[in-house]
Image (cartoon, rainbow, N blue to C red; front, side, top):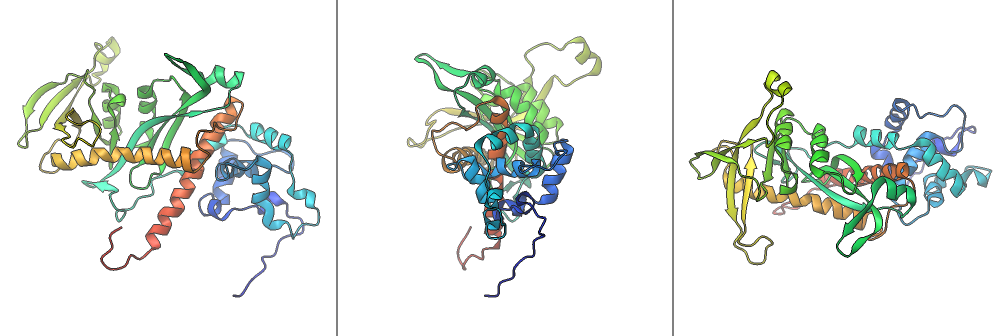
Length: 385
């Protein structure tokens, strides 16, 4: 095999040459530079750990979750160890990395996540679309963070009848693509933050051509109205307490129902004519498999897909259970990408938010590379992906 040595300027620094192949395929230098400039995070003097390096380090540390941060930095620059005369150029102290992380802050990681993390599925991706709409799921999970006074004040501990949780916890609410598990929108809040309010904020990540799935815990009139205002279609489950007004039975036995806001409209809403009711389609079904959760419990789904000829009820019911793909994405992030049952590293709230978004970007990088690799694999005849 022919080898070629890439010329490196004698004035090059480790930070200007660092790269991990996996990161480099998604986090291109131009994107990193754009994020740093947009967040006004570029340093005024040359540093051993400039903002661009620290930004990549905050992502890479979630690819090597078992390594200390100084070892992660060495991984980034280790390919230069034979090219530099000074071995100290590849070494940084734990204190220097900590200071660099908090000097960078959380905003560049949030901006990088929003800049990079986009849907990955194409029309040829299996089970990615239904009725021409991209399947996406909204859900939430909690993650433990170090038990420090700052984290307890910022995020709080979960209280139970038997006491409070051992660790402070963050609540991560996110929207993921069902087929590829790519997380494309997310927010970090205290553990007791209202999921519905968080979910409504995250609807900025959806739009036309999306069928958004959510569980009964996220149901609210405001969620339905906000999703429709974004041009997206919705498919969710009604909680037992919801009592929609039934208006008409369709040809397939499903019903058109009206959802109303519980509180009366205020003067501003009356003046502007803001929407206070929404018509959706309700589908009722029962699982008859005793081995499945929810056996013999009636499920009530609502959807904005009103035409039974264009969106058959059976296909909608099957599609709703694709919502569980979100749980697989969470399992990848919490159990396989990092040590299970272990809290995040950061002892201060800013570091926690920075680390959480770095974790999501690292997961997206992995999914992007795997999705791209799957597209290039030619399956043998008779095999279905």
